[in-house]
Length: 209
Image (cartoon, rainbow, N blue to C red; front, side, top):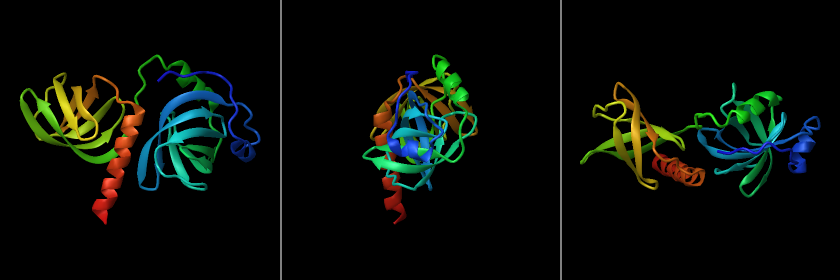
C-alpha cells in the first residue's frame, strides 16, 4: 500500500495524552489490532512516537486496551483515548522508535508481508476439476494458510472458494504435514477482507452461544 511521508496533525485527544509527541507521520498503512480474543485489520492513517490515529473495523471504545501490529520489531501496546465512528485515537504505553517506522516506509517498494488475522473458517479448494473441503486458520490481503487433507505441489495453481470473498486464484507457496500456504494472485482489498473477518467473528460468537 502506498505511503505518504508528510507531517500532519491528529485530533487533540492524542496530543493531550502525549504532549511530547508533536510530529506525526501520515502513512496509510494496514496493520492488525488485537482486542481481547478478537482481531481484525486496521488502517493507520498517521502515527507519532506516542500515539496514532487508525480506521478500525471492530467495535472499540474509549479505554479499551489493544495491541497494534505494524510488522515492526515489536507489537505495540496501547489504549483507546477517543473514538469517532470508525476512527480511533491510540495512546502507546511506551514511545516507539519513529526511525524504525520511517525506515519501513521508505522500504515500502519492497515486498512487505501483510498482517495476518487468525480466523476459524472453511472453504473449498479447486484443483483442476476437483473440489476439496479445507479449513482456513489465518488470512491476509495477499494470502492464507489452510489445512488440506490432499497433497499439494509447491508452485501449483489452485482456486480457493471462500463464501463472502469469492473464488481466489492462488498458487501454493509451501506445504508441511497437511498445512499449506497460498499466495493470492490478486490482493484482497482491506475493505472486503475486514468486512469478511468481522462476519466470521460474529458467526463464531453465535456458535458459542
